[in-house]
Image 1 (cartoon, rainbow, N blue to C red):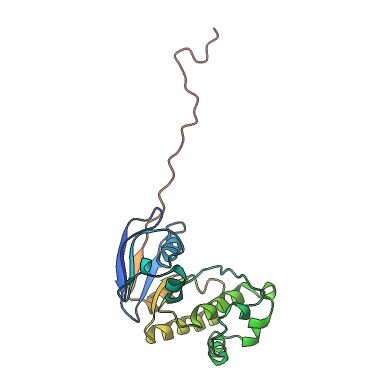
Image 2: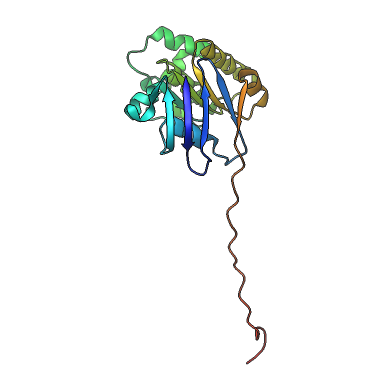
Length: 214
């Protein structure tokens, strides 16, 4: 179980909710509402007050890299620090598992060995899902996982997410694809629009003799 208690990240109000194994929570809200910030806070990538528990263990009770091996954030625009996607995968992962994930997402595993600079945005997005899933995290924090994909490929991603849920993983999903969110999740968290910044008064003060010659 994932339990969030009074999590306060940036301008977001304190948030509390919980997910049981195999459940999906869809996070909705306009641009700038803080959807990505919430996911990053849960993954302990950004500072945030409050508590996040996974199976009874609080995120501060373990090193950050250990927490993120269990609670995996997949950005809408994944970053890479290697020349190929294959180099970013753990050396201990079985090649058959990598191949099965690639097959499920509709691309050849040989794509992982091509320079990332030659990959399309959609290919990089799918390879990031392989990177995220290959070592069996407990929680998936997915930020617009189908944004750069056509409808057929997006359907493959949706099916893979559903399979992860059937395997007991917990999913928090940020997506503008409302029908997909409705199919995957019975729970919805709606974030409020960002508050407008206060306007500065740039008018020139006028005294009683303004506009008159001395």
